[in-house]
Length: 104
Image 1 (tube, rainbow, N blue to C red):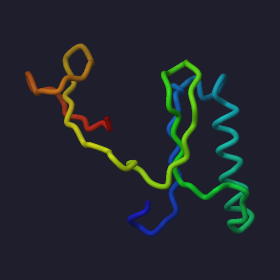
Image 2 (image 1 turned 90 degrees about the vertical axis):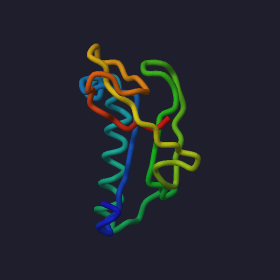
Image 3 (image 1 turned 180 degrees about the vertical axis):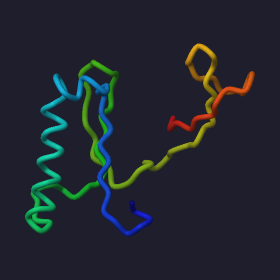
Image 4 (image 1 turned 90 degrees about the horizontal axis):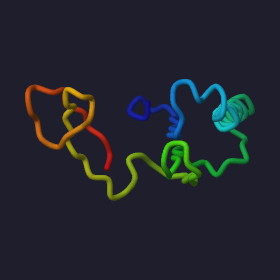
């Protein structure tokens, strides 16, 4: 979206596909309402304007939210990971697994 000159908002949270509709609904609903408020009011918002919000902590555990100016954050290192037959990632290719890139 940014490459097309559009404003983008990224929220990375500890939810699963289904938990977003129950225990994580307040966070997701708050983000959606904030976005709607900003865009329907012509950009007038109380938010600090940072386009990235990331949850830091383990899935299901208490954690903190960090607001960032950009993604990936400074110090990001790209690493190649390969999926094993059992679904877990490994650092080296073996047996033709599909490659995925994840931030570390």
